[in-house]
Amino acid sequence: MLERGLVQVYTGDGKGKTTAAIGQAVRAIGRGLNVYIIQFLKKDDSSGEQVALRELGVDIKCFGENYAFQRLTQKEVKKAKDFFEKITDEIANEIEQKHYDIVILDEVNILIRENLLDKERLAKFIKNKPQNTELILTGRGADKEIIELADLVTRCVKIKHPYDKKIKARMGIEC
Picture 1 (tube, one colour):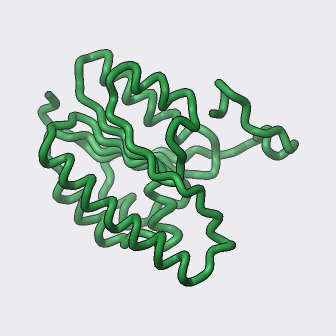
Picture 2: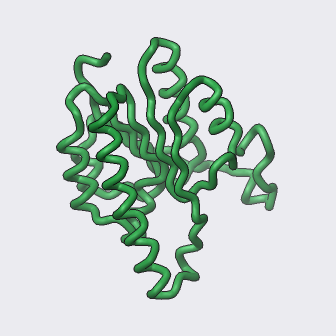
């Protein structure tokens, strides 16, 4: 059990945000800590890390609609927003009921940026997290207020990426 849990943010347009969070989870598991991972905007069993971490006993929930934000109608935006607001209540309840040393909210920064989750709601969640729980937030475009609340912030910067050459995600490497 952690004495003091901090808030970490991994953001930026470069590769490595989720990878950094998953690396932290693996390190924690190796030391006997309890990890809970919530992946927004990602489908269940869509990546190798989900499969491997479940085999290690990690609780992972995926809420993957793979929303293409620029194509959503107003009705779809409202539906997505309501969906994510409801999910955050469920997550808060689960964290209260079980003790998790580390909680990872993967891609949550995108939900804030796209206005699918209220920034004040996330800020309140951060401020009210259990003192001995490490909270890790990932996703591009982290909000300034969320960055201010964090203890550690890392910006992943893209210099060059295979996607620029139209190379798709490869099984076992990017997914």
